[in-house]
Length: 147
Image (cartoon, rainbow, N blue to C red; front, side, top):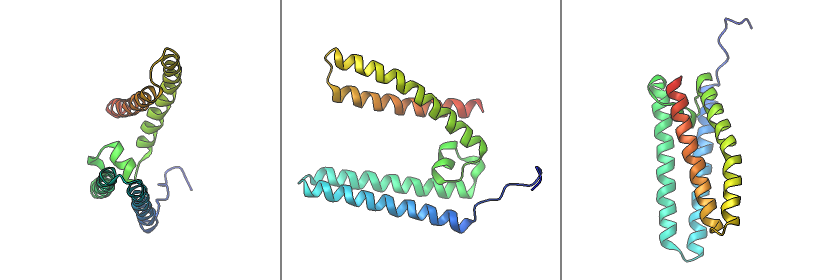
């Protein structure tokens, strides 16, 4: 293969099969979570988990449909979530995740200091996860805009 050839693409059927496996496994996971909450006599939590899970699966299918229909018009996150990222998308996500990894070392030490100072460990852990999620979203947006 010369350097001017385009790389081989994943056959559409294989890509579709992987996506369907992801959807089905997500639905099974949601079903297991709902069953556990029902068994623990928490029907409100079970309905919330079912609703949230269904919304996530629906948004995943919508992102897949949009990125297949017009890949140039959707964001990096939509193409990545739909399973059709290009090299630029992979580079952006790699940079964002490396930034999250670096921030996690800082947050771990700050969280440890906060727990040692007497703060509730569950609250510190929740805020750490929230801070890492915000770091990921902000770094994705910034890196995507910078190109």
